[in-house]
Image (cartoon, rainbow, N blue to C red; front, top):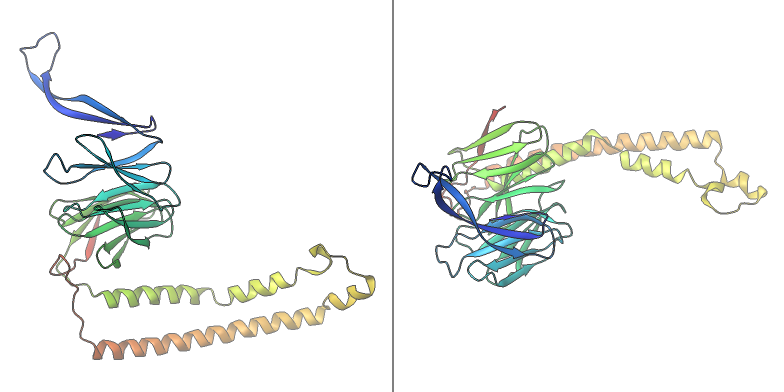
Length: 320
């Protein structure tokens, strides 16, 4: 099955044909034979089969340029479901092994989890800081991986709608993903001209610890650029006056325009305020680390069990 900008889905069957047309009794080769075509209303971005062995229940999911995902019966090509909600086109779709869930990754930075029975949206996840380029389920589970233009790969639980792991290593946009049939390894291809192989280990993952680690990274990122919002506000507030589109009388212009000493004093106050903000944030960070140690001593963590007995973490190896 293939789809393209010709607004059509073409279906093919495997067949055995002669290697040379003028020698029908000679060596044979495996060939593809075009069988039927399904016309669509817009460009086709990606297609996906369901996993059932029953021909009557086999489904075809199609992501279109009009931001929708449509589902058809494979045997009759009759329309079944229309999944809409993305603000931009879906770049990748996948269906779980039990045909219960469909996930769609969109250029609007979201991943949506859909039910295949009625086409209802179970959850919309803000997955990446840029367009989501690929999603793939782990076979026989409801865990899935997503890859984005922000250069990260994320590991999700589609039942609890939780982020389990974030895998960083690529130096460019991640464009494609593949998961082995056993789920023991994940392959990712990137704009940085590398293919990374991520192997599953036996090390347990604690969701609370991963969540706190991500929060600390966000907090440290804010500390690297303290007072930026305050400085921007001060600079923006000083650009009004007669240039803001309103007429000002000459007698009022002197009262509205700040003097040089006053402007210098304002800058000094803003610098002092940013230093106080930096000191306050450092104190809060130190307090948060102490509280974290206390919580780690008091709480007894258990690995979440949905499909896996132990949620896997990933260790990467690079092939260039």
